[in-house]
Length: 491
Image (tube, rainbow, N blue to C red):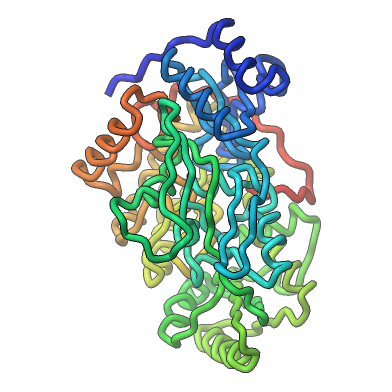
């Protein structure tokens, strides 16, 4: 498909945008505009022509109606913490930010529902509901900086999805604005509602290509009262990988089940300036169990210990205080930022059936050896979602792309051959769009395009994402500032 053509943003358009949201919320130049030209994926950068910080649904609708009339590309944006290039304005135009829409509108303790605006930081929502004894489980590594709007757009996951599910499992209803400025509501406050097409879950994970979410009604659950976290070192990566199907066969349902190979753990510890016992293990598995009955949680903990010992962990360690558990989670959650500090990288967000995790890890190691590349793997092994980071020190983006692309394709080929996918939780964006046909057939992609054409016939909403309409090689890059050791921000 040929690349769409959009009208350039003119002074008349800028004046109209200022009239809609106020002059102080329209950014046209300088470093403030630059920050809307990238997200946290690799070193891609495309400058927006203008950024608009909308504060209400009516403002979002007015901006989109204007863009539709004038045929301007619009890139919706929340916090810009995504890892698939979803918030990069690859065709310039207008970046439409919802960062000002950051209110938790209500928390209903009777119906177990929260109503929030898209700019609400995920961790802030979690803290507010936990203060009431409730729980919102989706917890991306960037939960301290990412927002609900971005989570909905990408169908975000996190460590606790192995037991509790993805963002889609907690979205009951959405308010959203279509490309032409029309506002619609999907779903309601009930878990059971099958009236008509399920537009709510059509929009969840649509990466801002179908509509801009302006409000979300989210399902909550009671907060588990008891949690236990086990840190299990292994001398052998294959043995660590075998722990995943072994726990399943033992009928243990962990709240979280994470795997870090040695290079990932070392990167995190170096980033934090830390040492820990077993920090030189070949691999580490984190297993968390939780529940409302302490005796049942402790019984699960005993089974976890038995399984880990049976597959070769010599010395599983219980984090016996909340502070110790939080410290281990800090190590796990900082790996993404630690990798960025080491070298330029491409992250393959692979996912396979959990029983195939050992095969995936073996396949990744074979690919790394065959192409003579460095890789760092870690992730949510309990649901088969491993982040395979391919690293290079080559500063030249063209050579880097030429060298790494065959290895990336080979890694995705391994994942898809095992019944897996090219992205488990990060989204397709522009980074993985070329690989979509590896896990979706031509008829499925045609059906996706038909939905896109029906809801956004002019193609103005987040163009260049999901479908491979823009050669990836043409997206500009610029060096990324490496974070300082011990930095807290995670992708």
